[in-house]
Length: 296
Image 1 (cartoon, rainbow, N blue to C red):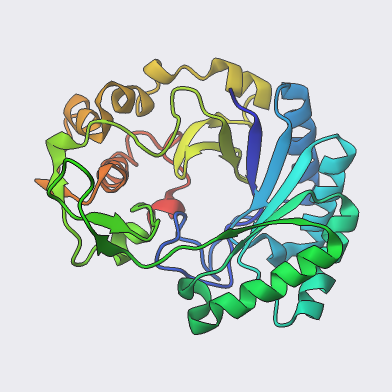
Image 2 (cartoon, helix red, strand yellow; image 1 turned 180 degrees about the vertical axis):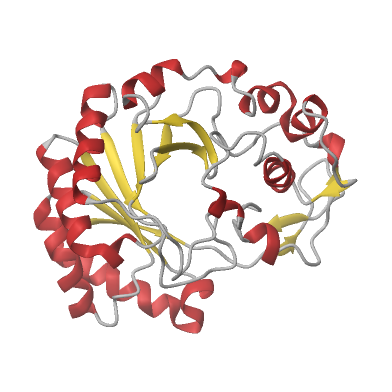
């Protein structure tokens, strides 16, 4: 059951990471206005059963006043609040506290930061320590995400193929920048979605264009065209033109049912699904959107 909404406050980001699901970067377009944000938060409450929102991006702190007011309004409405940030602003523990304090005072319950060599190189550990010190001072719960460039590990039990470590999902920019040297699997073996709960999602991502993403770039509907609660209630996974085939047999079944050309092998299910959806952009522009998250 859907219990949280992750708000893509902006697609803009000060980084342009090779592993980004959404092709975000300094030139990326699309940011909520304050009126849009307040309306979305109020519709989240009206929809019922949703108890929390998470503000992310892109990099949400690039629009800091908007983020603070979003957290404050969500808190007033009784919603639990979290943010996901690359925490570029934590040049010292004092600076980190300066940025986090207004969010904590607005009602922020938790923060999730990136701490990995992809973002901060060799200084990543020290960077996280500065944010952790500030979070302790403010009594703010802190989570840490650490992604690594893909590396090969030992085969899983019962398999002869090396595992891929690092936590990267091969969609978005990663499907263009992080494939070199990785083992592949026959396309016909990719018969499920191991990463998203498409049949019964617990969270979706909302952007300023109204898209409700089941997975980045895969929409269940548009809350600017219909009320958010109605979009959620009307979601019918088996009847969804993209989700239905995936549930019936993964990206391989998506290729079969929609008669899509495909490569003999892919890195994994996520990689093949991204490529199949990219091939379908013009056929389903209202469901595979916005096109910028496919690098188009």
